[in-house]
Image (cartoon, rainbow, N blue to C red; front, side, top):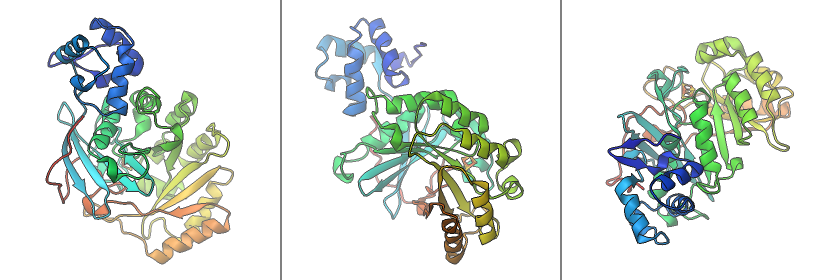
Amino acid sequence: MDIKEKDNKINLLEFSAEDLRTVVERLGMKPYRAAQICRWIYSEGVESFFAMTDISKSDREKLSEAAEIRPPELSERLVSDDETEKHLFALQDGEKVESVLIPDEGRLTLCISSQAGCALGCRFCLTGAGGIRRNLLPHEITGQALVAEAGRPASATAGKGCKITNIVLMGMGEPLLNTENVFEALRRLISPKMFNISPRRITLSTAGIVPGIKALGESGLDVNLAVSINAPNDEIRDRIMPVNKKYPLKALVKALKDYPLAPRRRITVEYVMLKGINDKVEHAAELGRLLRGLRCKINLIPFNEHGGSEFKRPEEASVLAFQERLHSMNYTAFIRESRGADILAACGQLRGFSARKTLTEAPPGV
Ligand code: SF4
């Protein structure tokens, strides 16, 4: 374990619950303090060591001299007409990433970023247009959740106070091109000592990185897997997702079929519908044939038009006909409207700088 000191203080968010035991020992405290600190940070959302009332005064003083709790800095918070929130973070080296908080009946879902930028350059995606800048570290990924919870009053969510109930890794970046950091972040999100979110409520979405899918299957993390397919054949997919040249559909579908799915779980197939490109009934039939034998459900996402893209949203009738064709082939297919389009928070619209409608005050950090 590498204890990094920044500005002479150790950021405790950088450590797993296990590594935190070593940190507190090195600071001259008993190792059991680590569990207490984790509870205060991750369950209680406490930002000051002096609020950790079951820790002795002398240990709290030691902690505040040597350590700090420093999540990514929230530089802007935008709110959509549909109550979706976009959070823009400035990382320590100046990189910008975004997360999107989606309140819904009985749940609070956070869509988090795994990289600053993205190397994959999907043609319909604003994030991809800017290229990759760097991978996020585990605490930069989980820190997005800490900040989202801290800024959310308990009364604003149904059921679980201000706790996030669901996590989707569908923000900026391709999580399976940053597996080491993403898998560690997932372990921390799942850990009962830290965020304590059930793996069944966490979904990792990939554009189809075949070795990464295999690694996720072997990791034992047991989170849900979503794959952004977006095309029924290689010809169309090559045009809109350059990653298809490296991992074509045949290899991708094989990796999905080989994925060790728990009983009663299904892979989510995402299909962004682009007018005149992939939205015809013949495409639905071809998609159905492609996915035959795969335990999956299909989410159809009509494209959110934005200034930076040549693509158009399909007609509603085309979307319904597409869905109907899939139903006729015995697939479960939903039409999903992306939320937060007015603040550029919808699928494929995250790019690391702000849109409109800023709240007057950003919520406090942790
Ligand atoms: S859709 Fe996802 S994988 Fe594709 S460029 Fe955008 S962020 Fe990257």
